[in-house]
Image 1 (tube, protein in one colour):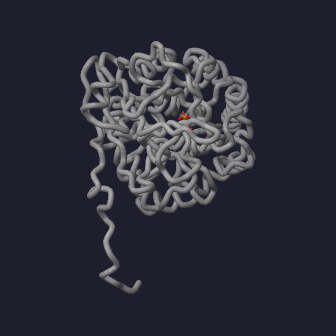
Image 2: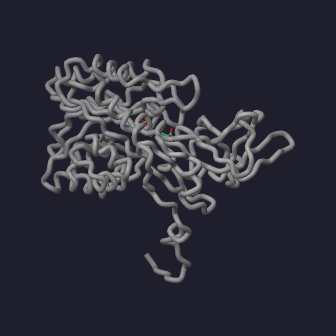
Image 3: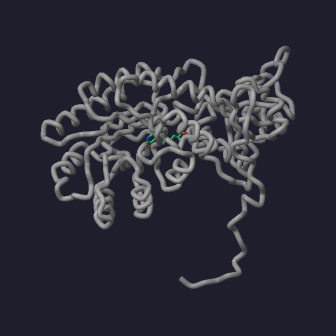
Length: 412
Ligand code: LLP
């Protein structure tokens, strides 16, 4: 299999497995598609860094003028280092620490997406002490069911994210009490991997109605952030939400809005641009099932274990004449949950064969861990026939750096 002109078998032989491989053309394609759909609007794509926070990916975003949606001081530092200007960065998240708020003010981020009254008061206190005014948007929880997996649904009133419109209304009504916070924006994010436009439309309409109400009450709104969540194709029959249709919904809901519109897609930009390459360690004919044991595991790609997520799996190479076998595709980690797929139909595989797990560009490497003391996988970026290692494989020493035997005892 050829990936943007690079032979994956040759690549895996050189760089080893498990190996994340990203296509820069695919990422550019998605970003440019979205940016051209936004043409003529005062809109900024703030890439949701958590989807894939590799420096090379962030640099690629910076190069085409994208901003970033961050949720921690660590993500802020990654973005600044990759060259994303602070004034294109928005800071979301339900629990920002005081030092992270300071760090964001030091950098001069565009705005905070504020998720609770306690956070609003904290930002007021910190900005006031610095003699500054922080720009803020309130994250609305529009109480809409995004019709996606429960663990990645965020816009229902029972979820921890954002505040109700009633609560937000009171923030605006009392904004004079917080002179160090300029509350002039609205934000929402109702969930992830959304393939159905109806909940997006519903949420946009609720937010737009609130914006109109606020304007009528004399509160100028400079920024409306519609969040991320655009779903992608993980399996046959699914289709990524077309950028043009999505943007048309935003345009229509926010018709007449004179400020800046922000979008925070993560997965949409990077998921389909990535594969995880892994070798077959062995096949195992169990009493009831055939197992395909890979050298990648749940620590490398957690999504199937955590969300029962489907990822297409392919055997790389000539599959002609190979019988089809139903495999439970698993990793070597000592947990039954370390399963990529159950009863997946694949050409018969042998030890040493190369397998690609598709749709791994988002929430793959960024959610990886060293569980079972498995070093973090390497990552490469492919670009028109060439490739660059954008994260070298973690060494054993790097993996345990920071750990030490308990010899230096102290008292707090
Ligand atoms: N904005 C905010 C405030 C978010 O919380 C998120 C994702 C995004 C934007 C980007 O969402 P996206 O466009 O990528 O759907 N680990 C899960 C996904 C968790 C998403 C968390 N928040 C997964 O692997 O499916």
